[in-house]
Length: 138
Image (cartoon, rainbow, N blue to C red; front, side, top):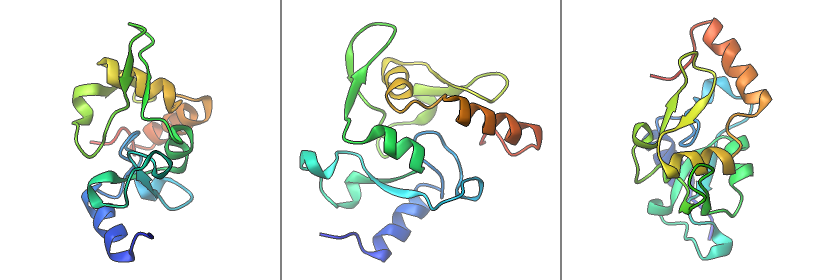
């Protein structure tokens, strides 16, 4: 089943037109934000609204079919952050300079690791965005 344009637009509005994982807004990325299946289709995730959110290409590609990852601090296997059901600020935060995403819970730390949210490219771009006042997101 394909996702209708109407549902895509609804998800985009619900997500505030930004990635649910790294919070990068559409106007700062080159390509369109993608519809992410929180539970991937290959793992029987549906195209229902409750399983869909918006993600940038980087987060979505690193997430792939993952639903869980290892918290690097505790070694526990935990679910990845669910941008539809969980509050970003309860699991993730910005470092003081706004260039890195920090995990403040096992879910946050595991998600940062699994989605490689602090790659040299991502951090470099965020530093430039901070310099011109576009980042971090409010």
